[in-house]
Image (tube, rainbow, N blue to C red):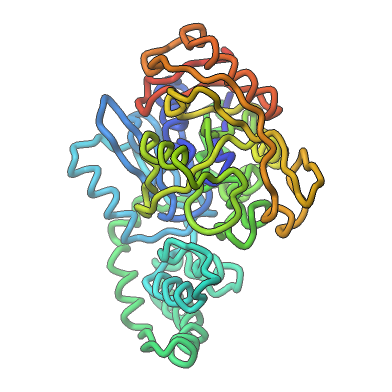
Length: 429
């Protein structure tokens, strides 16, 4: 399988980092691990030999010696966050994989996070729930054609002109609308130039690099950030991220054509979580929701925010399968469901008395959707030591197979704990 995508099939935090790390560590032929969208608002938790690591901007493959890591052109890069993350891993004695950054990736400057925070506060009750880290404003500048790209850092005159163009409008907003001080061009240019010497050896034409690697028969693993339901086009707009974390966006964000992709794996929890604002049909507000939060450790890796929890939503799973063209699902955190006598699974929605087996077309209908549940038998046995599908309790096996049927995509593997090795393969490739 020379080109594999790993994507989030819900609202993020599904365990994509573990899936990526698992594929990279168990298959010696995986040569490249690539991030293609988002910024340091993403968060992946990886447990290696009992030790927990969190990556935000870096590809999860950074922990896998022998793999080459790439930050693609579709990512928006905070250089401060990039080097802080690298330094923190080095300080823990981690042997880092080689890392390359696309010359065409856009830069998050300090003024982007300033704009992000003041805009979100200005929205009041209509807040989107952003991380305040400047990701959205950086993408706005990209689309407005006033963004700063990595390559611009190596020509000070071009960099200055681009920063001036970006701040021309931004400073009017800051001073006249938000009653804040204007940001000085010189300060931003100086801030960005401070990273040039350290950054220079990492910068490459990553699209060319990856296509050459595929031509040579090497295996490239494309790692998604955020998730399908946060996609700016296909998610629960406007409560979404500012990029396209679906499969089509991966191709654009890496500079690799869709005909080169062989496998598209959607990572999905055995229940559902969401961080931030927006509709969430299966959300729980009772003891079950608190129990899922507690047992599942549902706190955002990057934000520290408590995740909203709900039951598995097969409508969302079917939708993710369709818009991504999924070939497989990797079901995570099955162990968290241990102890429930009956486990509800959302099989459809009801909107104003009408049943919807597929995603409602409008935001209004989705906002008013109530789940139609099917109740499956639970289990009480500890499943964290299971390593074969047949080791799972019969009711846990039945739960997985029913989710597979309802989701319309085969479940390739199941996570039964946080560790790299705590995975049960359902279907051998």
